[in-house]
Length: 181
Ligand code: 5GP
Ligand code: MG
Ligand code: MG
Image (cartoon, rainbow, N blue to C red):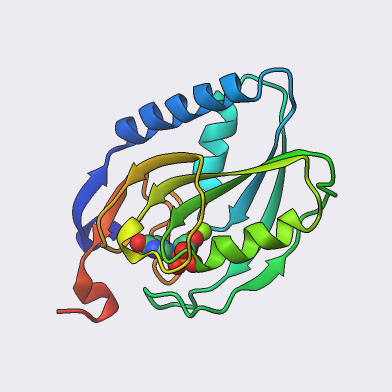
């Protein structure tokens, strides 16, 4: 049972849904008259992305990109690798990058730079979670779901060693699972 590995629930399904609806409403207001392209950074953001787009009422399009920076550990390796690039061109488009969590900022500072070089009309970042305590690279974030303390969280798309993504809530993983106390 996955449940047994969770120390405590940080955000319930209901809390997540309520916050996602607020973010979607904000995006609806900010992009009125436009047709944003939402770029999901795989794999962690796939659940958030799916919930978010279903709450956005504007016409929007989606695309996916896969990067890896973590391997199976709980801290960033600092190395970002593009595992899968976007399928579409983003030149002239209003891009919203959708991420699960902003931690050191390594992944996103690299990714945003890469996407900006393709000349989108605009680019903004939407992250479900933000762990500002661990930031080493500054990243501007326009939409942020929740600010969280420096704990390793899983669920709602976020994994540890590829597991726990299917938990419907976000919880703090017991340190014994990854070899802590
Ligand atoms: P950064 O490059 O900002 O350090 O890390 C970003 C990526 O690291 C996230 O997209 C996520 O995949 C992973 N990450 C950072 N903190 C956590 C966490 O608490 N839990 C999980 N599951 N992944 C995390
Ligand atoms: Mg991610
Ligand atoms: Mg991961």
